[in-house]
Image: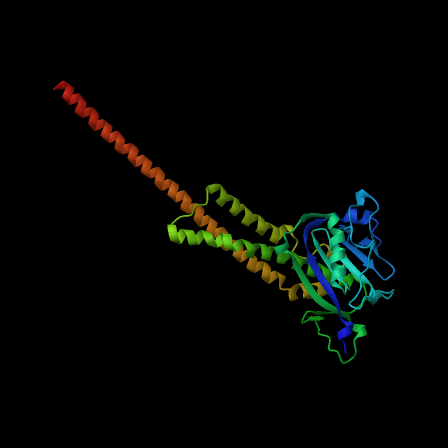
Length: 324
């Protein structure tokens, strides 16, 4: 059976940003190195002989609460540390400066949560719990599988990844795509959470013919939609070839297959369509408000003209009475 040869790889996104330089400067008991020239991806590794230590100074921050043990191990379900010095038994963590963390070989959920908790001291901008997302796959090395195992040509199918080599760069390629997918999930969850507020606007317009939203609120929400579109399409780096592959394109083809597996481009297209619809809705609301303001202005002008006519007539009547 090949079931025991597959291990977990998970992508998490709990924060907006990590200070990778601070992680590098803090003695955590794990080996750490940048994997790209821009120093935007940090790789951390551990084995049975390594652990994450409690910091010894206030500058390092608190790694664990007082009721936790002084070291963090990453046990498997049998209570045994699953890592030895063999490459395939090491655990890897790829920490991205824009928030995602991709964990390879952390076979115990408690170990993952403890590791992420320890990283939280280096985080900026915590993402709301109901928006936090996790991507989970399984992976195995092709050379450890029997000949009876059919490896798909794309080397990713049914949430399983088949690694051709033990090189870190191959795992980086998968990690970049998983990080993009989990980051995109945050935008998807945020949009779903905000749809209820948006849905109330057309419902109010159907019932009352207008909305009670003040002009400033309409403008703010329109700006929020445009900023979200900018984040998804430009700022977050979800589109185009990541900078990492400009330096090392060996595994770019594999990255592209994983990227397509997560349907990232299609999901971005759906997000953009929804943002467009919401933007059009707020445009209609603004035009309706402007039309209402113009109607009130026209009514005021008509009333002023009517008052002027009445005043003129009244003046003529008074003058005639005085002359008579």
